[in-house]
Length: 294
Image 1 (cartoon, one colour):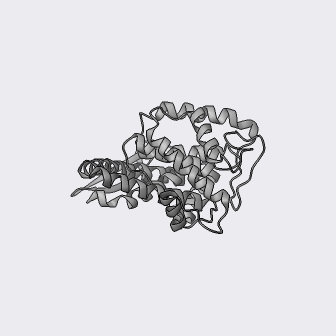
Image 2 (cartoon, rainbow, N blue to C red):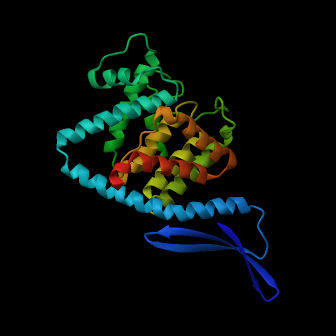
Image 3 (cartoon, rainbow, N blue to C red):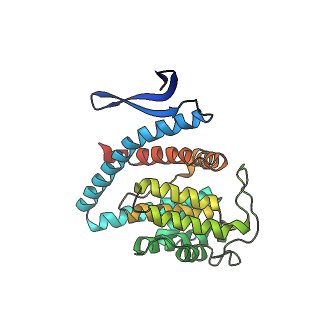
């Protein structure tokens, strides 16, 4: 990327120019900055680069969707059911483990597939894993769209039998996130922020790319942090609801990738820059489903 100056008469005009390769051609893209260099030039550069790569990312997402759909049509019903079962086990394990669950992947598989309770593991972790599986099946069959009512219901079901005092309830107290620099909104702000979230969602759900919609749904909701506990798990369920509704493969954010996941979330929240998390999410999604790009 280069900063260019154009002199027209006695006036200097500033532009950013970047060259990208598309197929066998080199294309030059530029944006106008103004008659003076903006103070937030670094942010403008990052957004410019992001927007350029977003075109290629979205093309790849379309290919992933097409090839995923083709593969599903060729798979026998029993094979699709087994693949979904495997995904639910891994997704439940990872999303719970990220939040501190003591269940191993094998514990989770035995519990959800065979009904075998793991020994010497917290009862709360066991019940919440079972609840999570139940909600996931509900999400797959839910024909309506996201609303506060259904999200409160999912949250209530997630903590049924473990934390009844917070289940399905918007928090009325301030919370902190252990190890994070981000401070969630005050309780008095939550009603307004939730209304704004659903307004944004309903206005954009048919306008923006479904992978971007899923990522922003996750980021925006977990940033509002409306619950005393379970914000991450509910936002990741919402993320996969959006992907599944748009016939995109669902994403499992692995526990082993939690550090980069946490860092991208926190940096986006603290800097109030959604592009940070979007870039992480897009790369993670492409890495997860690169087999559909061959």
